[in-house]
Image (cartoon, rainbow, N blue to C red):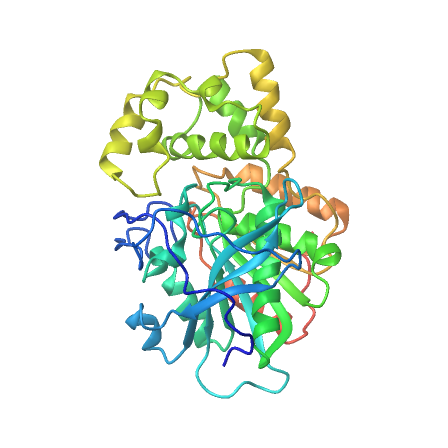
Length: 403
């Protein structure tokens, strides 16, 4: 079915781990992980990058690894494609999984949904496509494929393919990764349409929002119809300030080591030790493992933290971190197509007022936003209205903005 030729040998995966997902998909946040599907090498594979975003560097059959997914009748591939770093504009290799529905493509080709996953970690072995169950995201792939979309799940830069350069929550990078996932699949599968949507939860919701903003300048050759962002972080400076004044919630404390690591990838002048108390520093390796890895150990470490565990050691360090994460804030430019944003009033990770303020800024730019605050939900929100929005924009229907 794939029309390109294989340029390298089958994908070489990274370190074997066994973990449980902690901040994973809403469908099954307690999914138990198996080991990555290949464990023969610990070195990150190297790729001959072309400088052309969306170039497929290699691919392999994924269906034989996941009986549950292949039993849906979908054709599954794990592939590595070329994208662009949002930090320095350099070409990068990113891995992903694509699922093609069973049957004959509709007139105009299969529409594409690129699904951005939530936080899984910052290390290479935290890429969902290294696991047969996609760290629980198999449910998202199943659901969208069943609806007749070619469904793509990217790992994001630095996850899955190795390299140790995942700039956690830097939105330009993940936005580019989402766009190039759609581009790679559209280029490789002639039965796909150029029409696509960006969808995501949490970190993936931020990625989908960023993809919408970047589509006009970076997404040439594709036709983005809309984006769906569930519980997206739009401004991380309040999270940094909460670390400074000792008001972080427990799940926010678990995310701070990831945020500090990611900030260091964006600006090497950021030293996580400048923001880590004795407990965080002593447990750094534990806290940076994939979400869910040694859940009990992480919980004990977080419980032992003082309220000011992540306070900066100086005013200069505080400003340095605020400057870096301030560059992540969304929106940044006016989006060209409608977006759906849902968030929970009881969210203790991405606080609802942060998302509401992001929506207000988007509305002020003139964006078409369908925003929904769900009064009884926390970080995991219902996607029922989001699916209705998605069906409408793919059908070319007008979707009234709530701005």
